Length: 351
Ligand code: UD1
Ligand code: UDP
Image 1 (cartoon, rainbow, N blue to C red):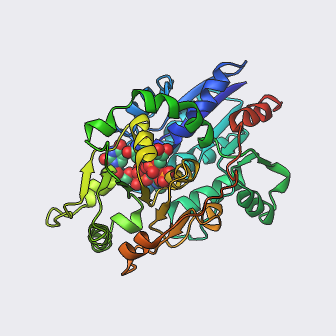
Image 2 (cartoon, helix red, strand yellow):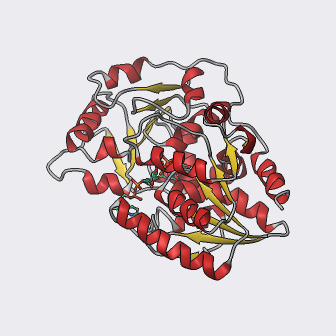
Image 3 (cartoon, rainbow, N blue to C red):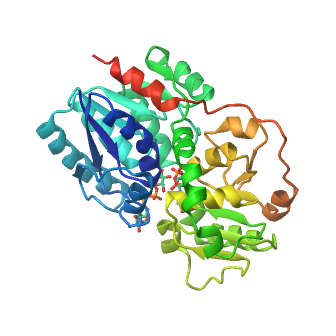
């Protein structure tokens, strides 16, 4: 089969890596299609290099823009690429604007769609991601669900017959790369963190960073924790951080990191504070206490297991709640294993 794997944002490259490697070992002809949604070296090329993903076969270079402009431009360019190459199958990942654009154009051209990370719901329709994932799930023919909750959501929406409980592919990316990261990465010594009990922070959700008041509140609260915090700053967050605001001195802002350096930081830190989807999972996999600065999450298993604490970003007691958070000893295997192989087996059986 001729397959289009459509990606555009950092977490999608990380989900693509093990799948693309497995597809390359098989009989399919895969085209990696990069929409260009993320384009900084640190957000895109560096992740490809770290994970050994070959350069995209098709790069649409769409770049930033308001959602309508961005999705429309992606659709126009994806339509042309699909008309030219005529893929037999389109694979989309997660819930970004690149996911939605890929799914819409494939559906219009009657090309079957695999949706990786199907069935997640925050039940918060103010998130662009919630709109993207619901629409994509209802356009796709093969729904690869990462968790039992995702399977349940899809069943309730009438999609049980096309749902496959594969587990989460980011488990395989982590498994394939953690030892390499621990051997190769020098980030811990570069930042002088060898004997430091540091926290790792990321923020990029629109409701946390597009409102300067909320972002300043979060950073002020985290400053009052009085502990070292390493903060790789997402470009959206960097853009929105007011020049007039003095970031508390315990918070060390650094550039977005490559995947290997970032998982080395995750592995070494004391706890993780984030609003990222993927990082909540990685915290759980690496047995790190996770504080999620959101009112809800799609990864409800990590909260039920008490390894992830949700805190409303507007909460006045963020710091004291973080300091008091303790995790249990026990974990269950909520994200599965041998995920890529399960996905490839299903793809190989598509006629
Ligand atoms: C996007 C996804 C989000 C995902 C996140 C991963 C959507 C709706 N959102 O959010 O689900 O969690 O990626 O990181 O698709 N920018 C740069 N350089 C880059 C990329 C972005 O400067 O390489 C800046 C631009 O000003 C851009 C802004 O960041 O306008 C936001 O980027 P965008 O891709 O629209 O959304 P994210 O917040 O990254
Ligand atoms: N990540 C990275 N460098 C960083 C921050 C995150 O490589 O500086 C990785 C992280 O390990 C995880 C993924 O990016 O695999 C999460 O992506 P992000 O938080 O951008 O998006 P989300 O998962 O929320 O959609």
